[in-house]
Length: 120
Image (cartoon, rainbow, N blue to C red; front, side, top):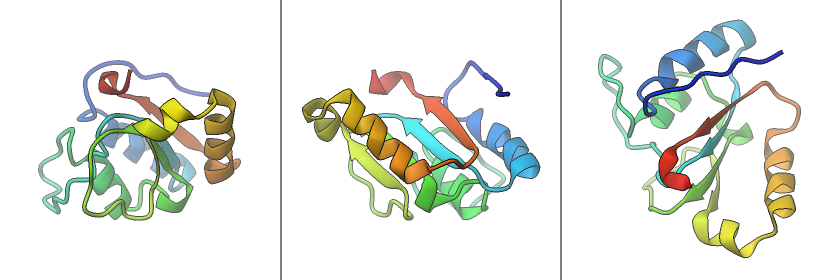
């Protein structure tokens, strides 16, 4: 069984991840995105699309060692242990190889898959 959510930018992802983590514990995040959304911001009263992944890792909603960001085109000061398959690597690689790398990182953990339009 799974859940599909649609809409908005990564502003909506944090509360969804919070609900998943309450049910399953920390989840693996598979994030297709041009930006890491790991901008440092410890003010939890404010959630936005650029800090979603940072806050999800820092609050324990996401297991960083089991998470991967695919298609990243920008630099980040600290990926907080989240694996990155950047855009150049995606373009150089066979899709099956990228999928195998994602499976190796995530394993059989509960996961949340996110597609941001800017990675397409």
